[in-house]
Length: 267
Image (cartoon, rainbow, N blue to C red; front, side):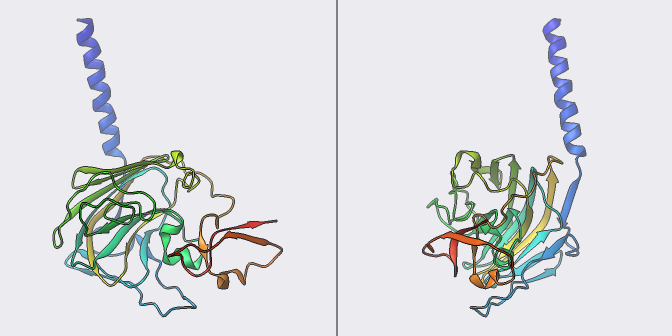
């Protein structure tokens, strides 16, 4: 009898926890009718290149992205711990899209390229060659651990769960990536909060539908003391800083944008 009672108590606890979880409100980022829950971060000037802006439109309840070089649609508020759900479709071999997480548009460059301040879950067509630039990677940083097919022209489901330093990516029900940034000395200081958004570039086209996010915690850490830490910026962006400052940076790495990598400001 005692074991039976303990079993009932455990079952009740599970049911209550599930009920509480289901009652947590979801923020709908795209419901098929408008972009009222998203902010466009593609209207930027680049002093070195004439860039074709990403073009977003809605057709039959689907968000269609025609990729330029840069551009993304971000949430109106920041999130800390969350579960993000989206359905996406790649329309051709050149489709290059992704979901930005924990990003902040601190500078004109990071407004164009949000993965410089947070992460981008890469959504492109690829093969079983797992690498940090392929499908479901945290672009340029972390390769997925499992291959999950994403044929062109079909709808796929992606879910991203962030809790503290742990990021988990699930594709069509398969867990393809789990990463704890606290164990990586080069990424451990990336803020555990920021905007989320949809991105597409490179000339290919992609579509999204049923995009929502569920906050798992109301706690959002304070902004980092130095918002430029870890970014790659152009010198043209420094002209309006004013005051006394000193720029320290590492030499530009292959593939980086104009400027230096990892700039930081000292007194």
